[in-house]
Image (cartoon, rainbow, N blue to C red; front, side, top):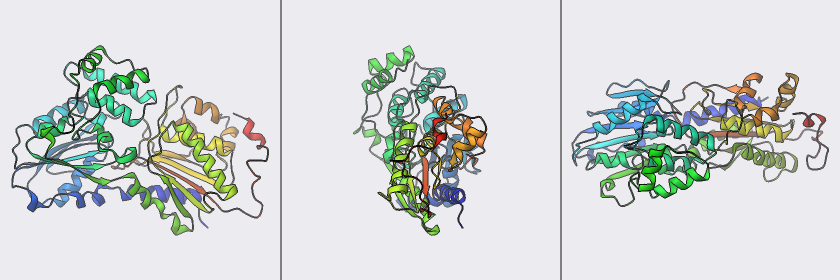
Length: 443
């Protein structure tokens, strides 16, 4: 007999394992005979970048040197590539120093040299080099405001690119005239290279005007120096067609879709696995309601999928912070899902971030089952109030339902799995027609 919780966790672990750099980086490395015999320099940033550097070292026989910055606790031992740890999601001085050193490392390169750039999610905060005239404190304030605003990852990164001296193609431009090969591990909806770590090696078609519009749309009070840089056009990023990027190429090492396919191990346990999408976006609590509607339709109507089945999805939701809770987006989505499911007896779910960190907490996510709401009420915890306070982590910690992985050293975005068991002899009352159970009136 299967355990729904154990199966969901096996699926999450399979997704994380499939995106380990040791598995997916080697195939994207350039063949040695395609290089011109110059220096090989490795640079990079992100939660998976240290593990990517380790994978490069283990498969590269020739000489190389480099510098990679990753989140505290995500380092991997390397002999030839220096690993620096810095803060995430709010940048710090260590990340600033690493970004400056990285630009120095790639200055003065020759056409025969090759730069391997290892980029994964989290790189935006880990390479916080402010544009001239801005300070680290300015960047920290903008980053905090963006994280609380409800802006999409694409919108946040548009603002970040234009206030950076290293993102928005500027890092690749600094490597010119060397060849630049960027290996990406995608953590963004649509796998847009420009949005992964704010695109330090990608041309940027967005403009200063776009960044200003986003800040205005979400009521983000930018520092005066940032406003001046954007209004004057001084903050403009590197645009498509810039000759300094003529020898820059992008290679995708891992994506959420690849990882979701690996997570479909549910089929081995007799469940049909259906991928709803790898780029679901929107307010986390709204996405939770929508996913609940799909799950209930499958459970009670056998549409569009017949149980037993598992519904898989990825992407990056957003949270507009209104309360004082401890986040994050996966647990907010999951708590909203639980409230909308109303304790359905055949539905279980797990939502977690593949990097092991949901929001600012070192907790990947959480799981729910039919008794989640009842257990909370028995403990005097009000689920709806926890959701209103953006306190998903606090809610699931109290129930012992948090998913803690430690540093996974990878990052292919969020994992959402909803498991729907087959109907027993006595089906649950039709949720579209039957009155809600009494406990749904409690908050």
